[in-house]
Amino acid sequence: MVKRNTQEYLILALSAFASSTILIFAFIRYIREDWLIAIVDSAIALGMGMVFVYTYKTHRIKIPSIALSIFSAVAVTISIHIKGVDNVYWIYPAIVAAYYLLECHWASLLALLTMSFLAPVLYGELGFISFIAVLTTIFMTSIFGFFFSKSVREQHQKLSELATRDSLTSAGNRRAMDNRLQGVIAGQTRKASKVSLVLLDLDYFKKINDEYGHIIGDQVLINIVKIIEGRIRITDALYRFGGEEFVIVPLELDLEDAGKLAEQIRILVENNVLVPENPVTISLGVAEYQRDETSEKWLSRADEALYRAKSSGRNCVCLAD
Image 1 (cartoon, rainbow, N blue to C red):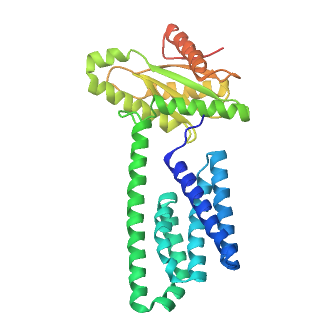
Image 2: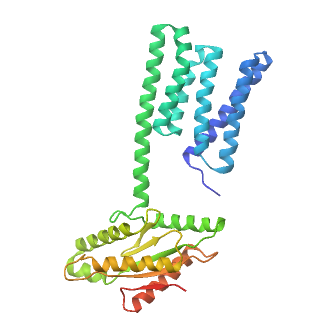
Image 3: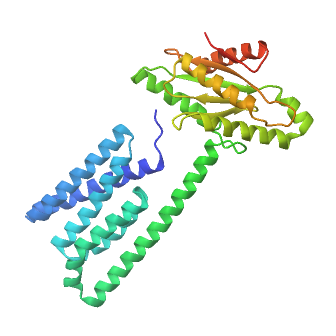
């Protein structure tokens, strides 16, 4: 069962509440023969209901977030144009919701457009002083929403990076690697293609730590990551598997091409002077994904190839069967 996140729950709650509540108002207005606003309410309730169904079934939030924000802004605008300024207070939750659901700049644009459509009505019915007061409070709400949303998103991004990045080397960590491999395998069930992974290990790394200290050892790991990231493509991914072991997941490379990439990386590391008078080398094992195997099995085959590379004298590349 797919776990729903906070934003998904919010979309479901808002769309369900709005749909049911507005539908009740629509029913009352049909009884009162207030046909225009009843039709508008019915259309908005239907739209909100469609957002709920789509989100509930697909677990996707991008399109529902946009739709819910637009529905809310349109509903407020139409309501004020038809029923008058007594409904102006609905604009505040609509703005706050937009800043939570959308990127800050899109939410600001939606708020600006909403106010542009509402300004003539508000000015005409409220008078200058009241119009300025409403405009000021809406502006203040938008400013608060903008900076609060921006702060929350920045904090979320930092927490995400901390949760998926190795603190020393800034390569992806084990959790990020597991997610990537699961994603690759899931993609293979939809559209099979050649994909391989490279497992590498620094040769005699313990000796480097013993002779030069852990500070130098840490710097070697950092530099190894820089060398690898300078060679792989932006679509490829590098993860620290543990200790001095790393995993490269280059997309759409068969066993032979991934082996060539591994050999190029091996040569780059060997030719870089990472520790004076003590050449640093790596051993690499390469495995191509086989149909229906798990990520554990895939990694295990790469590990077996790496073990053969170690047994063959190190500083070499071995391909899995």
